[in-house]
Amino acid sequence: MTTNPWLTIPLDDYEGHMDLPQVGQLAFLRQTLKTALQQRQPASLLYLGAASGNGLEAVDPEVTRRVMAVDINPDYLQAARNRYAASLPQLQTLAVDLQGDTSSLQGQYDLIFAGLLFEYLPPADLLEKVVTWLSPSGRLLVVLQEENPELAEVSPSPFTCLQHLGSIMQLVPEAEFAELAKKAGLRELQGEKKTLDSGKCFYIGQWGRAENIQN
Ligand SMILES: C[S@@+](CC[C@H](N)C(=O)[O-])C[C@H]1O[C@@H](n2cnc3c(N)ncnc32)[C@H](O)[C@@H]1O
Image (cartoon, rainbow, N blue to C red; front, side):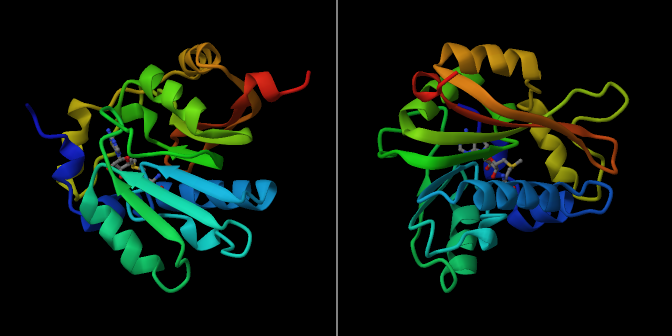
């Protein structure tokens, strides 16, 4: 069995790459989560593909009483626990491969954040799981990277180990995501595009459980 490349990338390299001015994705994802937290005021947050918890500084611990961060890389989650031990004592973490057995992840959440995660695993399977983790009025906040034939999917940078991600990274076109999400029982409530200085464009969507959404 091959090792998932995410287990081979040191956190400093991941964060160093994402924080480069020509990449700028760490700040973008942080702001995306912050905006949704302010808008939704969720009592619970499930952060899928959380890495070291980018954006969790925007969680108001008095409002969002339950916070669960999930990632395949236990070292990233250890960094998250260290980083937020004082400001977010309710932070729980779970190191699990979201492509595999996720029965250890129980309960439902008012906000589920998956920022640049669907690119690294089969989206249909994860969407079916997400529906079971969403509270009846909950929202899935998703960020997808859009295809741009003029730009490399993983931006070139001095952090060369990030290039290993090319072996598993598969962009998910918005239309394909929408079809899979609808099939899983979700309905889009908000959708927008954001282009960063790098020229990369992203889809930011909020989805809820279709059966609970009034027309
Ligand atoms: C592009 S990063 C996004 C991190 C985070 N949203 C942020 O703002 O920094 C994708 C994250 O998903 C995690 N990941 C990738 N595949 C995964 C899988 N199969 N199961 C669980 N986590 C996974 C990686 O370890 C990585 O931390």
